[in-house]
Image: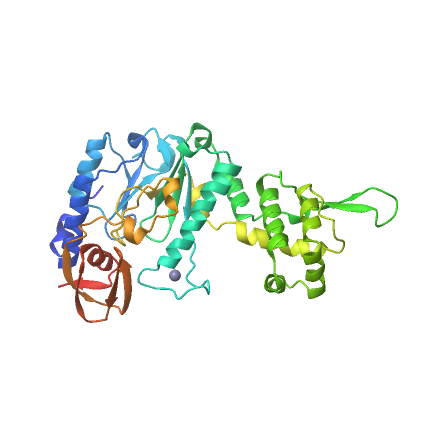
Length: 390
Ligand SMILES: [Zn+2]
């Protein structure tokens, strides 16, 4: 395999030299590596996410030496384990199974709830983080029965989060089985008519009761129950209107809240007649609220490479930091995934106008203007090619 560096390094800009030297110091003091390193295929990026793949290492020391010598901007490894990770083509590697991995990076840029900041958007980062918590808690732990010590969560280093499940059972899942898990999470093949059914108890047309999920339901039935139950419990005029529920119908629901909720708890969704279209709307609402968008190929492609946890992301200089689930709620990448000296500063010339919120500060940038900024901000902007080092 051709080694990429020496020549290109000679032409590095000042900014690139700074980034490279700081990446090197980072890897000298922090030495990330994946579980079962010798069974993994590695990929490295110098100009893009993956320039070289099919690399393998015989020990942690070899791997760390490589990072320190080559100083890649992107470090990825296979979710799969192989007998011979560096063999090519893929079918000669000797596939031994793969971790179950999810990649969340839904774009919320145009969600209408905020003014998106194209330099770095805390709102978007927060939204994706909420998705990550839901994927971990509602789906992986709750519905799939993954235990917390088998689950590793890390910030991607840029706009999303990765979740890795490592245990013997998931390792053997086929690509097809992984697609079924995705279809459950994204609710793509969820048939809502299955969840409410008419139970006839007499001869007359009206002798039926509508049965649906009760408070004891599990999986999607429980998610549908929770959304509908909470809507009936709390909805005011505004919420009814948003769901296009008529004011007469809304009035009836409001007057009979307690009885509807009690019956629902038992799985009887028929306390009030003529609710069919209301239920239909609420079930659809539940799917929108509780399903998730994930990058599917990352999960079902068994030969995929994914960013190494706790390595640096070359587009931001942020750490793809591992975060325990119970600390995720308070995690803010632009404060907690910073890799470099918080006191050191550099002069840069910005190529953009706007605000960069980082390290607890709001830095106002003006295109073409020189400004002294903390190192974490300088490296972020240099990696993003939004500034030059002066
Ligand atoms: Zn945004």
